[in-house]
Length: 251
Image 1 (spheres, rainbow, N blue to C red):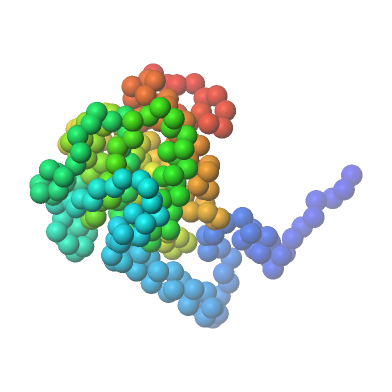
Image 2 (image 1 turned 180 degrees about the vertical axis):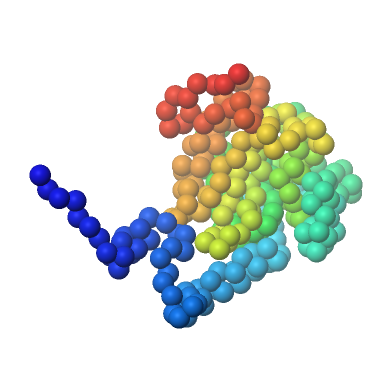
């Protein structure tokens, strides 16, 4: 019988770090972190701040969606500071922009929202949207809405105004100390502004290849959830991701 191999800490931590972006086993220099890790932490914090405050550039997304009709809107938060201080305003459409939204009926509207990381949206949103739309044969897809100073729930207001049965919001997620470019996809069926809650949504998080979910994997999961949502007439905690195998529906 072979005895289990015992690894010392010098061998164990590098092995574990291959499987996570978390800061583990950094060691010490006196009573503090080693200089290289302290500088790395400061750089990650700066990247997270930059992601939150960098302006959304809808022209970049529109250019990456050449051939796809788009419309631009703003939330009721007039500037970035207001957006950060008043989350409620980021969930409501600017009244002037509401009139520019094309009426449906539509089966789905995709909303590309800056959220808390414009970088994530600039880098990943168009690729995820194209890969998902390619799996939606027969769906009536509304013009893509590019939304500035937007929270996830702004998609409720947009879908309700446009007469879209489903809202898919591609939004920059809150930056962490390991990732400042993570994109989230939030799926909501028949949203109602002020009534729909987060429990009524399905979320795919950490879309950011090569370190997170790939575009194709995200699109496959999202399209499968959308089809199931339309079949059952619901999203949220009762709708399970069955794309990796059969999972019974609760309720």
